[in-house]
Image 1 (cartoon, rainbow, N blue to C red):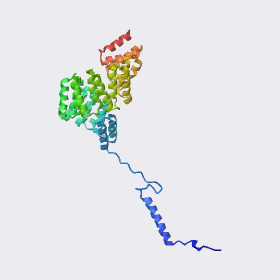
Image 2: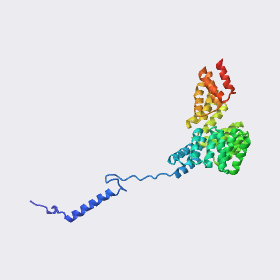
Image 3: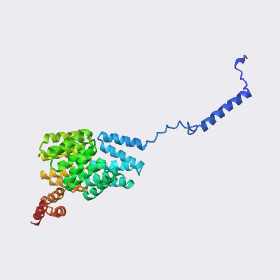
Image 4: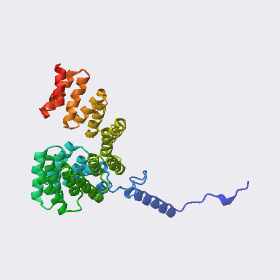
Length: 372
Protein backbone atom coordinates (compact mmCIF):
# COMPACT_ATOMS: atom_id res chain seq x y z
CA UNK A 1 0.00 0.00 0.00
CA UNK A 2 1.14 3.47 -0.87
CA UNK A 3 1.67 5.79 2.02
CA UNK A 4 1.95 9.54 1.43
CA UNK A 5 4.82 10.64 3.64
CA UNK A 6 3.97 14.37 3.25
CA UNK A 7 1.26 14.12 5.96
CA UNK A 8 3.24 12.42 8.62
CA UNK A 9 2.59 13.76 12.12
CA UNK A 10 5.37 16.13 13.03
CA UNK A 11 6.90 16.08 16.48
CA UNK A 12 6.56 19.29 18.55
CA UNK A 13 9.67 21.00 19.82
CA UNK A 14 9.80 21.10 23.70
CA UNK A 15 11.15 24.65 23.59
CA UNK A 16 8.31 25.82 21.38
CA UNK A 17 5.73 24.29 23.73
CA UNK A 18 7.24 26.05 26.73
CA UNK A 19 7.13 29.41 24.93
CA UNK A 20 3.44 28.90 24.06
CA UNK A 21 2.51 28.03 27.65
CA UNK A 22 4.35 31.11 28.94
CA UNK A 23 2.44 33.35 26.52
CA UNK A 24 -0.93 31.91 27.63
CA UNK A 25 -0.01 32.39 31.30
CA UNK A 26 1.05 35.99 30.65
CA UNK A 27 -2.24 36.75 28.88
CA UNK A 28 -4.26 35.24 31.72
CA UNK A 29 -2.32 37.27 34.26
CA UNK A 30 -2.91 40.45 32.30
CA UNK A 31 -6.65 39.81 32.08
CA UNK A 32 -6.84 39.10 35.79
CA UNK A 33 -4.82 42.09 36.99
CA UNK A 34 -5.99 44.87 34.62
CA UNK A 35 -9.10 45.75 36.64
CA UNK A 36 -9.13 49.22 35.14
CA UNK A 37 -10.35 47.57 31.95
CA UNK A 38 -12.06 44.41 33.17
CA UNK A 39 -13.99 43.35 36.24
CA UNK A 40 -12.81 39.78 35.53
CA UNK A 41 -11.62 37.88 32.47
CA UNK A 42 -15.20 36.77 31.86
CA UNK A 43 -16.91 40.20 32.10
CA UNK A 44 -17.13 42.96 29.49
CA UNK A 45 -15.60 46.42 29.81
CA UNK A 46 -16.78 48.56 32.73
CA UNK A 47 -19.10 51.43 31.79
CA UNK A 48 -17.51 54.84 31.63
CA UNK A 49 -17.94 56.66 34.95
CA UNK A 50 -20.41 59.57 34.83
CA UNK A 51 -18.95 62.71 36.45
CA UNK A 52 -20.89 63.99 39.46
CA UNK A 53 -22.54 67.39 38.85
CA UNK A 54 -21.28 70.22 41.00
CA UNK A 55 -23.49 72.53 43.02
CA UNK A 56 -22.11 75.40 40.95
CA UNK A 57 -23.52 73.82 37.79
CA UNK A 58 -26.94 73.47 39.44
CA UNK A 59 -26.84 77.11 40.53
CA UNK A 60 -26.02 78.17 36.98
CA UNK A 61 -28.92 76.07 35.65
CA UNK A 62 -31.33 77.60 38.18
CA UNK A 63 -30.25 81.13 37.25
CA UNK A 64 -30.82 80.37 33.57
CA UNK A 65 -34.28 78.97 34.26
CA UNK A 66 -35.16 82.05 36.30
CA UNK A 67 -33.96 84.32 33.49
CA UNK A 68 -36.22 82.39 31.11
CA UNK A 69 -39.18 82.83 33.46
CA UNK A 70 -39.41 79.10 34.26
CA UNK A 71 -40.02 79.62 37.95
CA UNK A 72 -41.28 76.15 38.81
CA UNK A 73 -38.34 74.42 37.15
CA UNK A 74 -35.90 76.83 38.80
CA UNK A 75 -37.48 76.12 42.19
CA UNK A 76 -37.02 72.38 41.62
CA UNK A 77 -33.32 72.88 40.95
CA UNK A 78 -32.85 74.96 44.09
CA UNK A 79 -34.66 72.25 46.04
CA UNK A 80 -32.21 69.70 44.62
CA UNK A 81 -29.29 71.86 45.75
CA UNK A 82 -30.61 71.91 49.32
CA UNK A 83 -30.53 68.11 49.31
CA UNK A 84 -26.92 68.13 48.14
CA UNK A 85 -25.90 70.93 50.51
CA UNK A 86 -28.37 71.23 53.42
CA UNK A 87 -26.54 74.32 54.70
CA UNK A 88 -26.65 76.27 51.43
CA UNK A 89 -28.55 79.41 52.45
CA UNK A 90 -28.53 80.86 48.93
CA UNK A 91 -30.48 77.88 47.60
CA UNK A 92 -33.04 78.09 50.42
CA UNK A 93 -33.37 81.85 49.87
CA UNK A 94 -34.09 81.54 46.16
CA UNK A 95 -36.34 78.54 46.67
CA UNK A 96 -38.38 80.58 49.15
CA UNK A 97 -38.72 83.52 46.79
CA UNK A 98 -39.84 81.35 43.88
CA UNK A 99 -42.39 79.54 46.04
CA UNK A 100 -43.85 82.90 47.08
CA UNK A 101 -44.00 84.11 43.47
CA UNK A 102 -46.01 81.00 42.60
CA UNK A 103 -48.45 81.61 45.45
CA UNK A 104 -47.19 78.99 47.91
CA UNK A 105 -46.53 81.50 50.66
CA UNK A 106 -46.75 79.28 53.73
CA UNK A 107 -44.13 76.91 52.34
CA UNK A 108 -42.06 79.88 51.20
CA UNK A 109 -41.86 81.20 54.77
CA UNK A 110 -40.51 77.84 55.97
CA UNK A 111 -37.73 77.83 53.38
CA UNK A 112 -36.84 81.46 54.08
CA UNK A 113 -36.56 80.69 57.78
CA UNK A 114 -34.09 77.94 56.91
CA UNK A 115 -31.93 80.44 55.01
CA UNK A 116 -31.97 82.77 58.03
CA UNK A 117 -31.16 79.90 60.38
CA UNK A 118 -28.10 79.06 58.31
CA UNK A 119 -26.86 82.66 58.14
CA UNK A 120 -28.86 85.19 60.20
CA UNK A 121 -26.41 87.99 59.40
CA UNK A 122 -27.01 87.83 55.66
CA UNK A 123 -29.17 90.82 54.71
CA UNK A 124 -30.54 89.07 51.63
CA UNK A 125 -31.73 86.13 53.73
CA UNK A 126 -33.55 88.49 56.09
CA UNK A 127 -35.00 90.44 53.17
CA UNK A 128 -36.48 87.34 51.52
CA UNK A 129 -37.92 86.20 54.84
CA UNK A 130 -39.59 89.61 55.14
CA UNK A 131 -40.98 89.31 51.62
CA UNK A 132 -42.44 85.83 52.21
CA UNK A 133 -43.94 86.84 55.56
CA UNK A 134 -45.59 89.82 53.90
CA UNK A 135 -47.03 87.74 51.07
CA UNK A 136 -48.29 85.28 53.69
CA UNK A 137 -50.11 88.09 55.52
CA UNK A 138 -47.82 88.15 58.58
CA UNK A 139 -47.26 91.90 58.34
CA UNK A 140 -46.00 92.75 61.83
CA UNK A 141 -43.20 90.19 61.81
CA UNK A 142 -42.47 91.07 58.20
CA UNK A 143 -41.77 94.70 59.13
CA UNK A 144 -39.44 93.70 61.97
CA UNK A 145 -37.50 91.34 59.71
CA UNK A 146 -37.30 93.87 56.85
CA UNK A 147 -35.94 96.52 59.21
CA UNK A 148 -33.33 94.01 60.37
CA UNK A 149 -32.32 93.45 56.74
CA UNK A 150 -31.96 97.21 56.19
CA UNK A 151 -29.87 97.51 59.36
CA UNK A 152 -27.56 94.75 58.10
CA UNK A 153 -27.16 96.41 54.68
CA UNK A 154 -28.68 99.91 54.25
CA UNK A 155 -27.66 99.88 50.57
CA UNK A 156 -29.50 96.68 49.65
CA UNK A 157 -32.19 97.90 47.26
CA UNK A 158 -34.28 94.74 47.58
CA UNK A 159 -34.50 95.10 51.37
CA UNK A 160 -35.88 98.62 50.93
CA UNK A 161 -38.23 97.41 48.20
CA UNK A 162 -39.72 94.67 50.38
CA UNK A 163 -40.05 97.09 53.29
CA UNK A 164 -41.95 99.48 50.99
CA UNK A 165 -44.36 96.72 50.00
CA UNK A 166 -44.97 95.78 53.64
CA UNK A 167 -45.64 99.40 54.62
CA UNK A 168 -48.13 99.61 51.74
CA UNK A 169 -49.91 96.50 53.00
CA UNK A 170 -50.07 98.07 56.46
CA UNK A 171 -51.46 101.33 55.07
CA UNK A 172 -48.42 103.42 56.00
CA UNK A 173 -48.43 105.33 52.73
CA UNK A 174 -45.73 107.92 53.44
CA UNK A 175 -43.15 105.38 54.61
CA UNK A 176 -44.07 103.02 51.79
CA UNK A 177 -43.42 105.67 49.15
CA UNK A 178 -40.24 106.80 50.89
CA UNK A 179 -38.77 103.29 50.96
CA UNK A 180 -39.96 102.48 47.44
CA UNK A 181 -38.29 105.54 45.96
CA UNK A 182 -35.15 104.88 48.01
CA UNK A 183 -34.95 101.36 46.57
CA UNK A 184 -35.09 102.62 42.98
CA UNK A 185 -32.52 105.29 43.76
CA UNK A 186 -30.15 102.69 45.20
CA UNK A 187 -30.45 100.43 42.15
CA UNK A 188 -32.32 101.62 39.08
CA UNK A 189 -31.81 98.20 37.49
CA UNK A 190 -33.45 96.26 40.31
CA UNK A 191 -36.57 94.48 39.08
CA UNK A 192 -37.94 94.20 42.62
CA UNK A 193 -37.35 97.90 43.30
CA UNK A 194 -39.40 99.04 40.31
CA UNK A 195 -42.04 96.37 40.76
CA UNK A 196 -42.57 97.22 44.44
CA UNK A 197 -42.62 100.96 43.82
CA UNK A 198 -45.36 100.21 41.31
CA UNK A 199 -47.18 98.24 43.99
CA UNK A 200 -46.94 101.17 46.43
CA UNK A 201 -48.29 103.58 43.81
CA UNK A 202 -51.09 101.16 42.92
CA UNK A 203 -52.19 100.95 46.54
CA UNK A 204 -52.25 104.75 46.69
CA UNK A 205 -54.53 104.88 43.67
CA UNK A 206 -51.83 106.23 41.33
CA UNK A 207 -52.54 103.58 38.71
CA UNK A 208 -50.94 105.25 35.70
CA UNK A 209 -47.67 105.85 37.55
CA UNK A 210 -47.85 102.31 38.87
CA UNK A 211 -48.14 100.99 35.30
CA UNK A 212 -45.00 102.96 34.36
CA UNK A 213 -43.03 101.27 37.13
CA UNK A 214 -44.37 97.83 36.25
CA UNK A 215 -43.46 98.33 32.59
CA UNK A 216 -39.96 99.40 33.66
CA UNK A 217 -39.64 96.19 35.68
CA UNK A 218 -40.80 94.20 32.63
CA UNK A 219 -38.19 95.97 30.53
CA UNK A 220 -35.52 94.79 32.96
CA UNK A 221 -36.83 91.21 33.11
CA UNK A 222 -39.33 90.44 30.31
CA UNK A 223 -39.88 86.82 31.34
CA UNK A 224 -41.53 87.26 34.74
CA UNK A 225 -45.23 86.60 34.26
CA UNK A 226 -46.40 88.03 37.58
CA UNK A 227 -45.26 91.56 36.65
CA UNK A 228 -47.38 91.44 33.48
CA UNK A 229 -50.23 90.46 35.79
CA UNK A 230 -49.47 93.47 38.00
CA UNK A 231 -49.55 95.82 35.00
CA UNK A 232 -52.73 94.23 33.66
CA UNK A 233 -54.46 94.57 37.01
CA UNK A 234 -53.92 98.33 36.94
CA UNK A 235 -55.21 98.61 33.38
CA UNK A 236 -58.28 96.70 34.56
CA UNK A 237 -58.89 99.15 37.42
CA UNK A 238 -58.76 101.97 34.88
CA UNK A 239 -61.40 100.17 32.82
CA UNK A 240 -58.93 99.52 30.00
CA UNK A 241 -59.90 95.88 29.62
CA UNK A 242 -58.29 95.35 26.22
CA UNK A 243 -54.91 96.49 27.57
CA UNK A 244 -55.42 94.40 30.69
CA UNK A 245 -56.22 91.26 28.70
CA UNK A 246 -53.19 91.90 26.48
CA UNK A 247 -50.92 91.97 29.55
CA UNK A 248 -52.44 88.78 30.94
CA UNK A 249 -52.00 87.05 27.59
CA UNK A 250 -48.33 88.11 27.60
CA UNK A 251 -48.00 86.59 31.05
CA UNK A 252 -49.31 83.29 29.67
CA UNK A 253 -47.08 83.56 26.62
CA UNK A 254 -43.84 84.00 28.59
CA UNK A 255 -44.76 81.42 31.23
CA UNK A 256 -47.43 78.96 30.04
CA UNK A 257 -46.65 76.73 33.02
CA UNK A 258 -47.48 79.46 35.55
CA UNK A 259 -51.03 79.75 36.86
CA UNK A 260 -51.08 83.51 37.54
CA UNK A 261 -51.71 84.58 33.94
CA UNK A 262 -54.63 82.19 33.42
CA UNK A 263 -56.11 83.19 36.78
CA UNK A 264 -55.90 86.92 36.05
CA UNK A 265 -57.34 86.47 32.56
CA UNK A 266 -60.18 84.28 33.82
CA UNK A 267 -61.05 86.68 36.62
CA UNK A 268 -61.12 89.58 34.16
CA UNK A 269 -63.64 87.74 32.01
CA UNK A 270 -65.74 87.05 35.12
CA UNK A 271 -65.70 90.76 35.99
CA UNK A 272 -66.82 91.51 32.44
CA UNK A 273 -69.71 89.08 33.03
CA UNK A 274 -68.30 86.68 30.44
CA UNK A 275 -68.50 84.01 33.10
CA UNK A 276 -68.30 80.91 30.91
CA UNK A 277 -65.12 82.10 29.27
CA UNK A 278 -63.75 83.03 32.66
CA UNK A 279 -64.43 79.56 34.05
CA UNK A 280 -62.47 78.02 31.17
CA UNK A 281 -59.37 80.11 31.97
CA UNK A 282 -59.66 79.58 35.72
CA UNK A 283 -59.78 75.82 35.20
CA UNK A 284 -56.61 76.11 33.12
CA UNK A 285 -54.92 77.83 36.06
CA UNK A 286 -55.85 74.92 38.33
CA UNK A 287 -54.65 72.39 35.74
CA UNK A 288 -51.29 74.13 35.61
CA UNK A 289 -51.00 74.45 39.39
CA UNK A 290 -53.47 72.41 41.49
CA UNK A 291 -52.33 74.28 44.61
CA UNK A 292 -52.97 77.82 43.30
CA UNK A 293 -55.50 79.05 45.86
CA UNK A 294 -56.57 82.26 44.07
CA UNK A 295 -57.91 80.34 41.08
CA UNK A 296 -60.14 78.19 43.31
CA UNK A 297 -61.49 81.28 45.04
CA UNK A 298 -62.20 83.07 41.76
CA UNK A 299 -63.80 79.93 40.35
CA UNK A 300 -65.99 79.74 43.45
CA UNK A 301 -67.13 83.33 42.90
CA UNK A 302 -67.83 82.59 39.23
CA UNK A 303 -70.09 79.66 40.11
CA UNK A 304 -71.66 81.65 42.97
CA UNK A 305 -72.60 84.45 40.57
CA UNK A 306 -74.24 81.85 38.33
CA UNK A 307 -76.11 80.53 41.40
CA UNK A 308 -74.41 77.20 40.89
CA UNK A 309 -73.88 76.74 44.61
CA UNK A 310 -73.09 73.03 44.40
CA UNK A 311 -69.99 73.79 42.27
CA UNK A 312 -69.07 76.91 44.25
CA UNK A 313 -68.81 75.08 47.59
CA UNK A 314 -65.84 72.75 46.83
CA UNK A 315 -63.91 75.58 45.19
CA UNK A 316 -64.35 77.95 48.14
CA UNK A 317 -63.37 75.15 50.50
CA UNK A 318 -60.26 74.32 48.51
CA UNK A 319 -59.19 77.98 48.42
CA UNK A 320 -59.52 78.17 52.20
CA UNK A 321 -57.71 74.84 52.69
CA UNK A 322 -54.80 76.22 50.66
CA UNK A 323 -54.48 79.18 53.00
CA UNK A 324 -56.67 81.89 51.50
CA UNK A 325 -58.05 84.28 54.13
CA UNK A 326 -60.33 86.26 51.82
CA UNK A 327 -63.36 87.25 53.87
CA UNK A 328 -65.73 86.91 50.93
CA UNK A 329 -64.86 83.23 50.48
CA UNK A 330 -65.97 82.47 54.04
CA UNK A 331 -69.30 84.25 53.95
CA UNK A 332 -70.02 83.20 50.35
CA UNK A 333 -69.38 79.58 51.33
CA UNK A 334 -71.80 79.95 54.22
CA UNK A 335 -74.42 81.55 51.99
CA UNK A 336 -74.07 78.73 49.46
CA UNK A 337 -75.20 76.29 52.14
CA UNK A 338 -77.96 78.64 53.28
CA UNK A 339 -79.36 78.95 49.75
CA UNK A 340 -79.31 75.16 49.52
CA UNK A 341 -81.40 74.98 52.75
CA UNK A 342 -78.48 73.60 54.71
CA UNK A 343 -78.08 76.03 57.61
CA UNK A 344 -76.39 73.38 59.73
CA UNK A 345 -73.29 73.64 57.55
CA UNK A 346 -73.79 77.27 56.57
CA UNK A 347 -73.77 78.76 60.07
CA UNK A 348 -70.24 77.51 60.76
CA UNK A 349 -68.78 79.48 57.84
CA UNK A 350 -70.87 82.57 58.49
CA UNK A 351 -69.66 82.66 62.09
CA UNK A 352 -66.07 82.25 60.97
CA UNK A 353 -66.56 85.23 58.65
CA UNK A 354 -67.84 87.27 61.60
CA UNK A 355 -64.76 86.30 63.62
CA UNK A 356 -62.73 87.93 60.87
CA UNK A 357 -65.05 90.96 60.63
CA UNK A 358 -67.82 91.38 63.25
CA UNK A 359 -69.54 93.90 60.94
CA UNK A 360 -69.62 91.63 57.88
CA UNK A 361 -73.14 92.35 56.62
CA UNK A 362 -73.51 89.38 54.22
CA UNK A 363 -72.67 87.02 57.08
CA UNK A 364 -75.18 88.75 59.37
CA UNK A 365 -77.82 88.52 56.64
CA UNK A 366 -77.11 84.82 56.24
CA UNK A 367 -77.55 84.16 59.94
CA UNK A 368 -80.80 86.12 59.87
CA UNK A 369 -82.09 83.94 57.05
CA UNK A 370 -81.26 80.83 59.07
CA UNK A 371 -82.98 82.28 62.16
CA UNK A 372 -86.12 82.87 60.14
